[in-house]
Length: 153
Image (tube, rainbow, N blue to C red; front, side, top):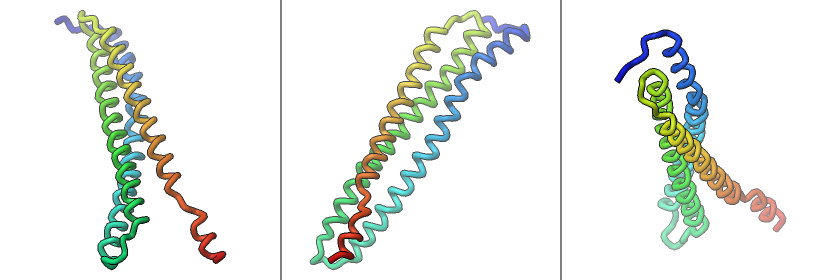
């Protein structure tokens, strides 16, 4: 395998390979955001579990169990979202390596780079759909009107 030694080719290879790094930055930011949501889901589940454990055996606490089930669904979506984002980051990282090697060696891998990049973007879009579904479930769980109704009685 021949590696390019002239500065222009190496510089162009770096420029070409750096472009997908912007997507990696977005993925890293989204992983941080989604991981924060997962932490909040876990914290809320622990509060509910403690409340259930402290409650009397005669009280089935059905609303708490219903909320725990919804939290479990949200947690599963968030975990899947993180997995998709991780796969996206791997595909984009491989795209960067492939683009750089294609530009600085005699091995042509531009088709592979295209497939890797499209796979990475597809994983990112699927992760966004999971994020949307999780936020819709979270919003559906909100019960702003409960206290207003109970105060009227």
